[in-house]
Structure formats: C-alpha cells, structure tokens
Amino acid sequence: MYAYIKGILVQKEATLAVIEVNGIAYEIRTPLNVTTNLQLNQPCKLYTYLSIKEDAHTLYGFLDIEDKRLFLHLISVSNVGPSTALMALSSLSANEIREAIAREDVRTIQSIKGVGAKTAQMIIVELKDKIRKENLQLADGKETSLQNEYMSSSTLQEAINGLIALGIAKPTAEKTVQAVVKKYGNHLTVEQIIRYALKAG
Image (cartoon, helix red, strand yellow):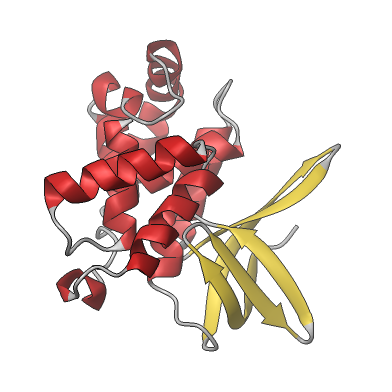
C-alpha cells in the first residue's frame, strides 16, 4: 500500500522511527540499523511495508529497497511473521542473512532469537534459490561516529529500550546489556550492544 514514506524524522528509538509528512506523523517499526543512520529533524526516506491484522496496522520501514525485499522474502516463509523478520534484520546484517541462506548455513539462521532449527531449515529451503538468483552484494550497515565515543547512560538505556521493543523482558534486557558492556567494553554503539545481546540470548 505504501511503497515508501519521505518526510522529516521527528522521533527515533532503537527500532522505531516517526516521520512527519504534511502534518501527519507515521510511526514505523524498523530494524536496528535504520535509526542509527537517521538524524532527527532531517529529511529521510524509508521503504515501507504495511502489515494488516485484525488488532493492528503496523508499518515497517527500511533504508534500502533490497532490505525491504529480504524482509518480504522472510515473512513469506511459514511461521515467520514480521516480528521475527524484524528480529532477524536486527540480529544480523542483511548481507549476513543472505549469505547464510545461500550457503545453507542453518546454524547462523538459527542464532536469530525466536528461530528454531525447523524454522531455520524452512527459511533456507524456501529462500535459497531466490537469494542465489538475486545474487545481491550489498554493503553492510554504516558504522557511526558514536563508535569512538565513551558510552553514556542514555546509550545503555536506549539499548535496553531497543531490546524491550524486540520483545525481551526488561529484567533480562538490563542484565544482558550489562553483561555485554562488561565483556566487550564501553565504546559500543547502541546497535552493537543490541546485536551482541541478541546473539548472547
């Protein structure tokens, strides 16, 4: 229904972007790397998909048309809904997912939270030919300048909020973030913290 939405970013969280277009603000769920690369109060464009259910209409947004295509591929698989696809694109880069599917790497796909062995195998069986045919060679998400900054309490809180938004209980999110920082150091970005946390889970 909506191919893309282009406007001013008026609010962002780890996995949420709010874009204002002609006085209407659209709330859009995004993979982890999206809002990291967007600036508040600046023009932006997200390629979107509208999920319609009886109890909710949810917009999902992506920086790149190919990431949106991968999301659509994932939700076409049985037992893989938008939330699981969003978790996949937050846990791994789009390139990592494509490569794992093309290589039939069940272990990597299964490392995504909420994806068991059976579902991982189904993803590979149903998508490997499509992914190989597309032969996509996209660069991984951009690194941000935050990587060189000392971690602030707001960074930790944003990481915790991002995990909660992805369906992880608050106590678990807080504990996992603390463990990640202790293990990997205090110069991580929000995106890096959440990725490590998802892999640890």
